[in-house]
Length: 386
Image (cartoon, rainbow, N blue to C red; front, top):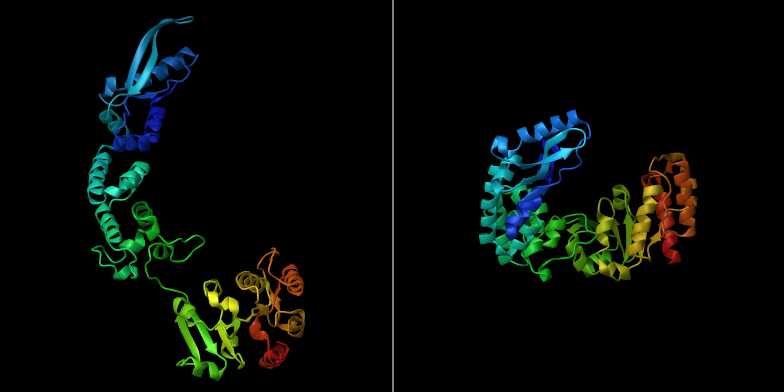
């Protein structure tokens, strides 16, 4: 048989449905509760029934109604047993679950939302608990109204002329994203599938701190051709995309010193691949027309990056990531605990063999241990072959 604690638990579990019924003006009461099976032991039955009676509305003046019916039992004769347990009114329900003040605040917030941004009414009905979860609806609605009136904003979050504290939007991106997706036209939303960084900003056409691409001009004629101010340049990825240097060769290296000391190359540029550069480069469509050479560490991670880069740019050729280079400098190899081998679908047969060896024996050779003379000689021969 159900007990007072279980009644309270069931009542609490229905809270979201209660709030939704209020929003949609559907009937929620009376809320009927299953009595359950009666104990066979008479003493247990009397004890549990006494608890039900003591905690019922008939005794406390709020909460659940307990309706009893006189029944004749086989063993114990005439007994008053539970026939129906129900919560009849909103007042009884809220006082039982101790949410009277919370519901008052909920109704006030709902009224505010419906007046300020009526387009959120459907969202309210689907997410009533979210109204309670967030207390700062005045500011949330200010943001919603601004985005409704200003499509394609192209400002940083800190630049938005909304009267909220400077970090409010940054601290409430999750709820704001759901609100804005509920009210903005679909054509105003940017697809962010597969994105991990600055998702909120990209979704709503805001500016954001972009990955920076650092590149070196390895051929003086390129610098003169494009009137570039320096040989070593760092620029946001969006600006790099606009350069359209598709007639040139690119050498990507993960190590900063190798990038800085990369020797001059006819018609060539070097890109520093550290950090998020490799991930960012996939959006540079004109790179698909360029010869690309990748020089990474001789380790598990180096080959993973190579495979990832080649998945976007299949023409990528690895340099100094071969067994000969490893054997030449294997005295500088150190233990590597990057983990077991995973299938990398974009490696050549030779690359796959070296990758498997390095993974199996837990070794890594950082590219900075490859001497400058070796690199210069390798690259000179490479140029003659292509």
